[in-house]
Length: 51
Image (cartoon, rainbow, N blue to C red; front, side, top):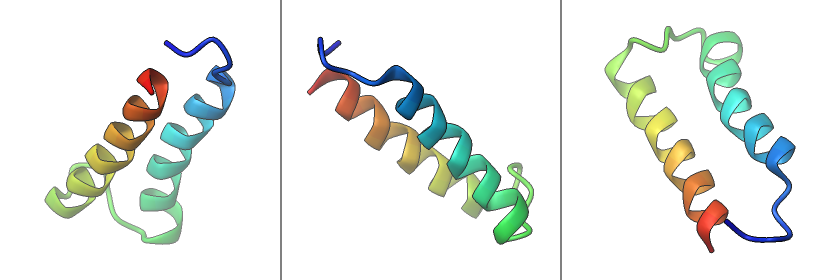
């Protein structure tokens, strides 16, 4: 992991993606399209953890 990583911001980004799906879009996280979006968000954060 990067030395300058803000781990709290990473957690916020991941949780925020789930919150957005549930509250803003009104889609349950079991929905296949929501899973694709959540996976994309997680992969983006994960890449940033390692970059």
